[in-house]
Amino acid sequence: MNLNEIKRMAKDMGLKTAGMKKVDLVRAIQRAENNIDCFGTERVETCHEDACLWRMDCLSLHDRR
Image 1 (cartoon, rainbow, N blue to C red):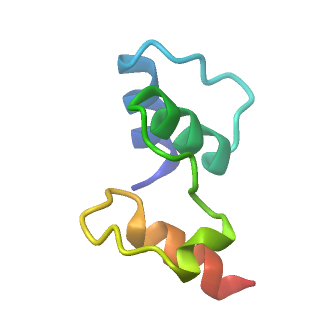
Image 2 (cartoon, rainbow, N blue to C red):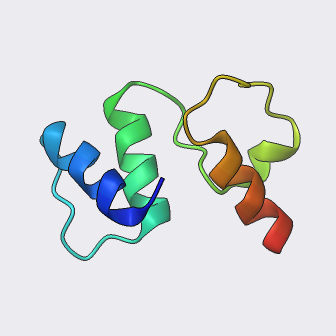
Image 3 (tube, rainbow, N blue to C red):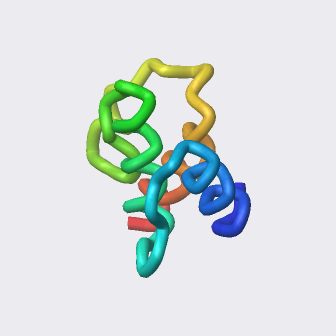
């Protein structure tokens, strides 16, 4: 999902998006949905949330490290 799509999603949820990076936006969305705000963290190494909307982006972030 690209940054503009994520910003739109966040704004639709009533979240403020000004000045936020992708990682921060996704984590804010995760918190708003009462999920663990784990996007881009080391939790990906043990994550089994195969249906997570952010999974592919999260895995690719981890692979870049």
